[in-house]
Amino acid sequence: QALESELARGALDVRLPGRPQTVGALHPSTQTLREIYAICAQMGFEVLRSREVEDDLTNFQLLNFPPYHPARDMQDTFFSTRANVLLRTHTSPGQIHAMRKHYPEPFRAVLPGKCYRYEQVTMRSECMFHQVEGIAVGRNITMADLKGVVTEFARMMFGAGRKLRFRPSYFPFTEPSAEADMDCILCHGEGCPLCKHSGWLEIMGCGMVHPNVLQNGGYDPAEFSGF
Image (cartoon, rainbow, N blue to C red; front, side, top):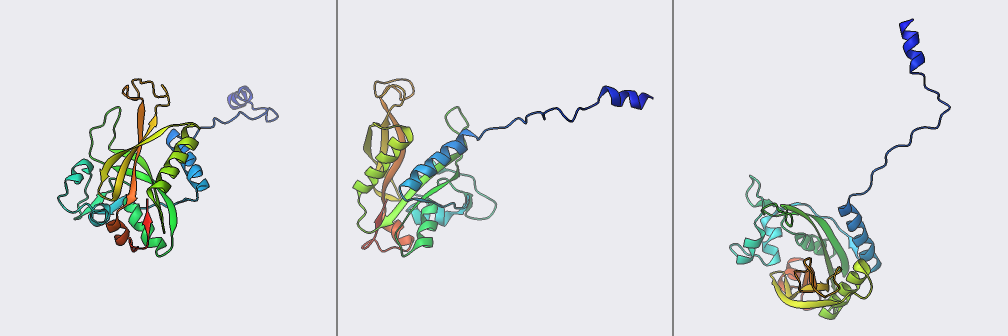
């Protein structure tokens, strides 16, 4: 009788409509990455993924970071117990993998993934972060092609009419190198706390692939160039 009474109290009318399931949403990082992939695909770039655990040779030396190069100081990372095996500090080792995969043909690719650096965790920095890198290798590619792609990407990603500027910079694996700035999306260049009252936001580093890096990827710098 107790069992029958309990079943009667908890009776389920199967004719009622089912309870809707709570559906989650994509993480903002995933949404942003997918948007970047879609834009780059329209410009002829394929998506290539490469490993997060690299060796010192590929992460540094083949990209013009010889041992004890001062530029390594900014990319201190996490090393494994195996000699010269580390968590990659940038997606740039993917350039070597991409070139060796496509050699001797021209290609365009974006290299997304997680990167790791030994940094203090704050509101603005983390020891792990996402990065998306683009590379295009072919004949007669110039800095003008690079600027055109970056400008078009910024306008498709952040809105038409975006203004860009390119400042000379230095990266061991590109020559010439530049930093790309975009007018602030909040103040439109007037100056605000987001852009540190400069009117500009740095969105990426860029440059032409260094001849040494092209050669390490298998391409002849006398015939090929890239960004």
